[in-house]
Amino acid sequence: MRLSRSKREGLTDLWLAGPATLALLAFIFIPVAIVAVLSFTNYQFGALTFDWTGFDNYIALFSSSVGRRAVTNTLIYVAIVIPFSVGFGLLVAVGLYQMTQWAPRWSNVFKTIYFLPVAATLVAMSVAWQMVLHPSLGIVNQALFSAGLPTPSWLSDRSLVLYTLAMIGVWQSIGYNMVLFLAGLAAIPAELYDAAEVDGAGGSWSRFWTVTWPMLGPTTLFVMVVTATNAFRVFETVATMTKGGPAFASDTLVYALYREGFVYFKAGYASAITMVFFAFLLVLAVIQFRVVARRVHYR
Amino acid sequence: MKQSLRSRILPLILLILGAAFILLPFVWMLSLSLKPQDEIFTTTISLLPSAIEWSNYTFALTETDIPLFLWNGLVMVTGILFFQILFAVPCAYALAQRRFAGRDVLFGLVVAALLVPFHVTAIPIFLGFAQIGILNTMWALILPFIQTAFGIFLFRQFFAQLPTDLFDAARGDGLSETAIVWRIAFPLALPASTAFAIFSVTAHWNDLFWPLIATTDPSLATPPRGILYFRDQESGDNVGPLMAAAVIVTAPLVVAFLLAQRKFIQGLAAGGLKG
Image (cartoon, one colour):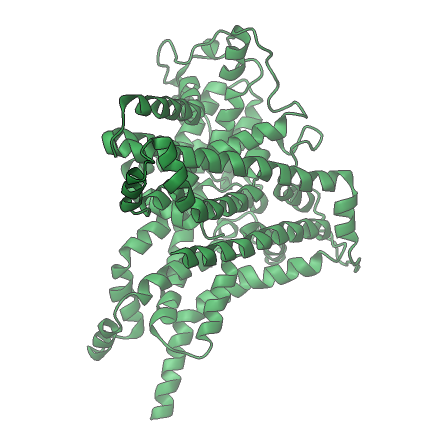
């Protein structure tokens, strides 16, 4: 009787948790193992056999100029997006937080506007950005032209395209960081501001440096890591606007893995790109855990 | 916190400038979608159309496959959300309210799975789907996402806060565990479900990566994929309808966001942190 009961309980657990566990294994853990193995082969999609090639794919990635390009472009992109997106996100959050004191409705309107790109379909917005930045019909170059300024080819100039994409990346993520900072600001106890005022730090500038900034330090670290994690995955804007071009000037890791794997069907090489991408994200995840741990420590 | 008028003006101006930058592509997209053809192909600046021209929208909705793309997107996000809830909720309940061998291991797997971005698993899933011959089907778009470590995690945290007595009482009333999951735990988790649904629908409606890989058949294109088909066919001379299509594709989520801002911000903020 007891045994059959525990068996029944076991079957219930299996029935409840089994399908999800199987799905996790089938669509996450087994694929991760396969992609790791494939990265040491020369497998081509559709081929019947493959050879073990050791670290050849990784060597090819880091020794070919195209492969190195994808890595450095991604790092440059992330290095631009982090400071601008986090910096502007913080400024907007602080501005809106003070604005809630005297115009809560307007503060909310601004918050909605800044968050809009996070909810909007990035591919459609990329098509829109393409028209905004169109060499002759775009509003940016029309304005520059009528002001007598040079009109750059934002998306087809090799030396400019990566910065244009990074600017759009910043545009897309400011609102997200703003929300994280607003949460951080709301958690600062009001007494700290009163204390600062008593101590003579009454102006908004000195209030920011004596109270807000030190209290937001841990949040800022956290926001930086989250921004980096999302920036590393840049794909939609690249695929829509530049396809990694011109001449690989805007090639990034995820776009390279898409092109090598699913356009040229070089599964082995694309798996190596995938593993490098994954390694970057795992490093960030470790940093994130440490930051979160420290954040708990502070409180 | 008292503030002088002067200390309000500078931040306000900066906020307005920033908001103008954020709104620029939205305004330009709307403006072009409402402009007649000859007004688009002019080099003089006019932010707004001289007269509102709906024909671009008529064109996008009747002469192109945009309605089909919207339908595909709807079927895909509904299918994904349905299976995600179906798989994640019972598992989360078991993790939170039941004891069984391997529970901690399973929870460890869920947390580990949170660290794996979808891009990493794309090649093997593509190979597997090619092997069983389901590429270029709606199933190819839905199946990879039926697992959701994030969903399991979110629901588990929610269920763990519910009192155990509640479930013991339900068991005392003779309810089966399956009935407890769907008739008691799941309805109580409505806030978690809302946040999760918003995150899931937004992420998959907007995704381009997997639809680009798993389907080559235009009749299966989701909205982002479809917009690129449309743009590439028209080779750049049908800007008005293209912008109208972009507006139509973006509108459902943006309207939903405007109607339920707080829920959206909660859902997307939680989802974006999953690493």
